[in-house]
Length: 256
View (cartoon, rainbow, N blue to C red):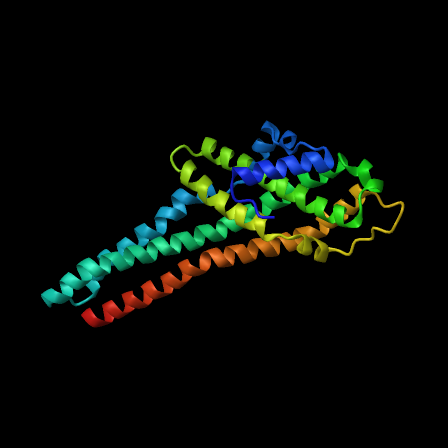
């Protein structure tokens, strides 16, 4: 089950209420929003490291006029126009790759905190242990995880960003929302099952204990999902950065 829009969220909320008698929205409050706000370090890097690489690249571009022999007018025009675009593009792409890496650290903290909320949610349905089948328990973990991510975590994080960062809050919140949505939807029931071998046959093992066991072992798997998602997101930017650098080197070689 992948959550893509508000209709999907409404259906997910209704299913959790119908199947487990839990309103996921009750876990979304000011305390949770404040906790997520404290976890977000990434936006603080945006102004410094989002602009600094571009400034450095433009400084190198200006220095190039004194280091590169541009006696030929065509060479001067080529470096002046194409060189400016390539230097700027390299700085811009480097900034994006760096910020994506920084964002990964925040996402790991956010996912871990979300797992903590998931454990709390299992306390509300632990008394249903005897009534739930094995498949229902497995599906329950997935539904609770999706509900917490899409209905609690993502709205709380994006709201915290918009409140803290007035000017860059909206674009940042959009980027992080897309990132977290991709991570949340990447986790499947099969992933959860692989994270730990569950023993549903033990009569003295409550549903709450089982889910806590799952989610504790699940952290390393979630980090792998985060790492994979980051790698997929940053790959096109890294690829374009390499192409831009090669084009820049080629331009300097031709006009030198």
